[in-house]
Length: 502
Image (cartoon, rainbow, N blue to C red):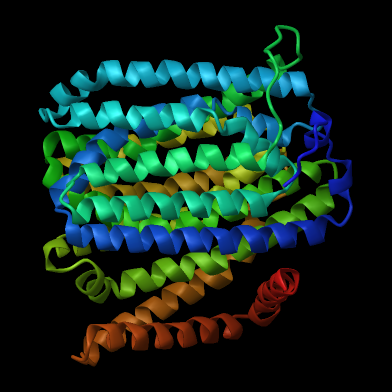
């Protein structure tokens, strides 16, 4: 944390060009540890709240969340990515972007509050009106922190960002649990979001002492706005692909069904998001600095890809293999319906673990217009699948997602790697080890549980399954040709992270 009054120090990046590997490893260690702590807090909070609240409570918030997932990115407009990716920026440019973010946040907060009755009519659920109005305040709070977070990331101050995020999540989680315990019902989930947003805003303003000046018409920010607009367009399109399932289930199946679906979706993807977010937050700034060096760019890209696949894929594999025990132990009997949905969504989640690498290439290389087209075509395929699947209820929607997602990912990778130093062959070369190992280990656990059904304590069952799964995962990895060398890269990276941490 610095108290320097010179705003230019937040924009200079020359000092970051030395020891890029060391900085990226340190940043990766910090963000992974920070995100892991956030994940534990969020998971613990979700599990405790699942015990204190009913599926319908989660369903009501899920109905409103669909609206917010669409509107929330507008407070950013992709301008944070523009600040991080741009080689040279000025105080006046960032100040202009800050006020654009504030204006957009204020507008969408007001618009969301005004549209609350429309949301209630759509779902035929009047309780979503006050929920929507109060959650709209979080949008305004978030808009005030966009550029401060971007400047911290640009300077690779990921330790500060991680500390603020952890504090925000912990404060929100504690507030939600206390509220639910004293009978707040679904309002506990609203309080969670508001407390988290407030803490996050205060945290970044106290951590980044840059203060915006007045906006200027000729600050040179127009090209950054254009860059951000392309990213924003992709996010809007991507929203429909990510949330049409919730809209259809909420509209035609009701809050109870949406609650079951959303908790399965959330618990399946939450671990992956906690891995993807920190690695992405480090990867994009580092790759942006390496965009003029294809060899270093490709080397870093594939190592980051291998790292994220080696962590994410086995997590999904284990969750799929042991979901029955996990749901019964951590969520309870009232969430049994979510087990089947969880299994149906798992293939989509498994493939989607590495989808994040598309954004690394598109954004860091400045190919945001290509990303926009990729998002448009991909979303059309995904949404079409949801409309077909909804005829078979929640299970049909989940199945449709797992059918379309592999098609979308393969086509997107092929398109993304055009005009880049990466290739589809290089992608499969690095991801085949964790993919084959995770699938093999998952199949092994399911086979063992099928033929040897040990009725022990649920917690002990999960522990033994995890132990056997881990042994199978690494055994399969090392017996694949080239597996030892690939695993050595992952181990070497892990050792580097531990050394940097110490």
